[in-house]
Image (cartoon, rainbow, N blue to C red; front, side, top):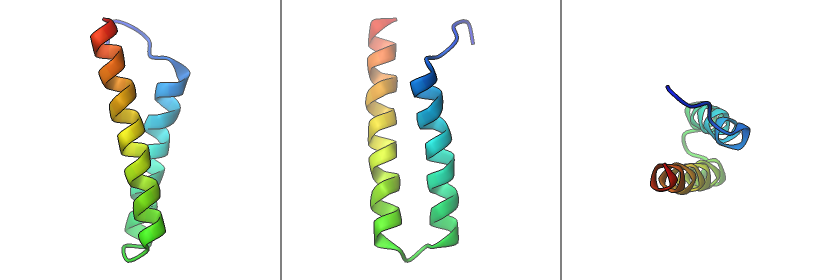
Length: 54
């Protein structure tokens, strides 16, 4: 990595890991899945914006 990422992006990545762990712990919980989906979408938007700006 040549540039350090903004803390918000790093926090989203950490949240993504935590979301995946929650899915593993509760694979049938629809709310956990929805929350994880939102994290993935938010992180995708953030990373797309960062790559366009670079």
